[in-house]
Each structure stands twice: as C-alpha cells, then as structure tokens.
Amino acid sequence: MVYCGLAARAGKIVCGADAVKEVILSKNEYKLLNCLIKNSGQIVTKGQLLEALWDKDGAFVDENTVAVNIRRLREKIEDIPSEPVFIKNIRGIGYRWNEEIS
Image (cartoon, rainbow, N blue to C red):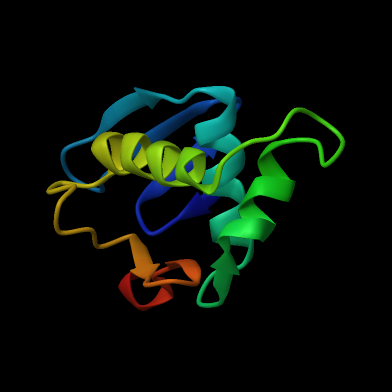
C-alpha cells in the first residue's frame, strides 16, 4: 500500500518523499491505518474502527481505545501530531483520512 508519501506493508511504513524514515507499527496501528486509507476521504465512525480492530464478540473495548490508538499512530506518522495532516478528527463522529494531501 502506498499513499501520500506513506508506503505500508507488514506492519512497517516508510514516511516522506525526501526524508525517508521507517516506522514500526503495532498490529492495531497497522489495521487502523489500513482502514482509514481504504476509506480515504470518507468519515469512518469510532464504531466502524472498533469493528475493524477488534472482534465484535470479543471483550468490551471502550471508544477511548480508538482515540489512544489514533494518538499513537499520529505520533509515528505526523510531523506535528497535535496538528495532524493525515488523520483528521470529525468531532463526535470519528476520523477521516485526508485525501487532499496526495
């Protein structure tokens, strides 16, 4: 998978066009990134992300868990995690992969 200067495969991504760095992702971070990119430009609800990351029949997982994993992913792929370019928060609904940066 290659998108917006990110090349992802097998839990690793390579960021940037000029200053290339390899970033190791956890299983959940990789699934989260994959889900957001597959739905690029569309809002993905927190519920949809929970279903993509964890088995519906598994133990209860709080929506805050999604926010924590998003934060960790942003820390790895964003230049300034507090001012995200790739992963946009849609307040009260979910998240959207910013397709406008490609």
